[in-house]
Length: 508
Image 1 (cartoon, rainbow, N blue to C red):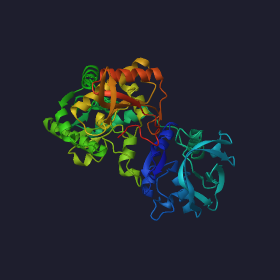
Image 2: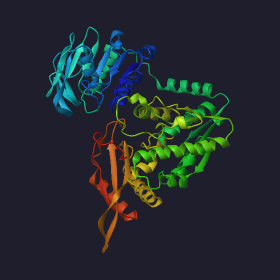
Image 3: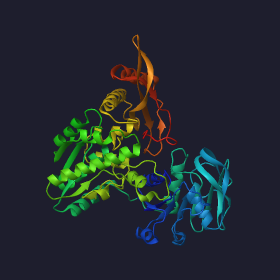
Image 4: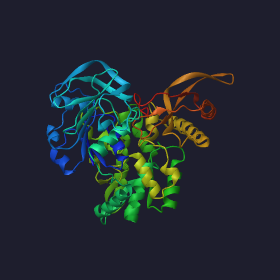
């Protein structure tokens, strides 16, 4: 495997994901992971991620420098490169200008790291510091338009550093670079196999559960659904799948869940109507983090109550994915919280049940592949991502039943038109957002003062970076016309044309 030591970069998951694409297993550890923990995993290589800190600041995060004595190939990315330079005696200084975005890279020395790449290509920069003096034993192998050393190497010890981010799609030949490091420099074996992973999870779940029962929340989303299917395959009737209608789901979501899991998978299911409880707790709350925490807390409370009605329940299963784990738990080290995740936002310690998370080390596209192998309906497997807190984080401001109904109807129309046009399965995500402002409009001969719906449609490979979709104007017009005509209380529709970064895909 390849280990990534995380210094807080928002792109850390991408590094791990790119390596998985090579059929090489990768795992993220905190930057200050113990040497013993690293050695226990027997990695073929180590990657130091980027991060928001500056290596020239007092108390800046640093890994145990003993990793450089292990004889394992190491690649530093952005902050990771600067940290290597500092540890080995180089000089890192504050840049006169922060460099963010595309930059032209020029290869100065043909190295195995740049195998099968041209002499110059575009890369994605995101830094403010730069290396002024190379450490002893290191050679500059590339520069950019703005910095003298954009990549260096100590070939004798197989230590490399790049100032740019090879993991993001904006860097041309980025996959080639990671491929060269992982397969040619680290000589990692390509033995990561999803089928074997599922078989191992099923065996592990059976062993862990024994004669106990497990409850699993099923929302109709890809993650929880496929987690439930794996559990159903592993333990059958010992799984009690619970669908909680929190009132924050899309239109007709509940009926669809019943049809798929009760009729097609013969799953042992219970349905709980908790709409009033969630709406009461969310009354007057506008802060998005508070919304997420409230929803998570109430969700666990509902499960605790239900668990007491079922005999011999000792486990709660969740569809937590690896990006959720990386973004929300202490593995993020020094980074700032962008948002917490419903599945992992500090909730387990409040529960009275132990956790089972069969998808915890998987990325979204890996989960979809597993779903197809398990004969989960294609409509569900390829469903667009839907956030755990549901429509609560797509309603800016206070959540009321009236505002929920407005958003449900608008979202229904948007998805309907996306599916009719064939665009639904071409894009990563498409959804409506209710904005907490009203605008003047004219309908018939009357002046209106009603709500605004924003439409967000993005293209992405993994959700870590995204670009807004250049939708046909005719389709956008059709969506807008239908929403304004059919949804009472809306008189304006706007289209979000912001990429991630700098924005996130969701608005909250």
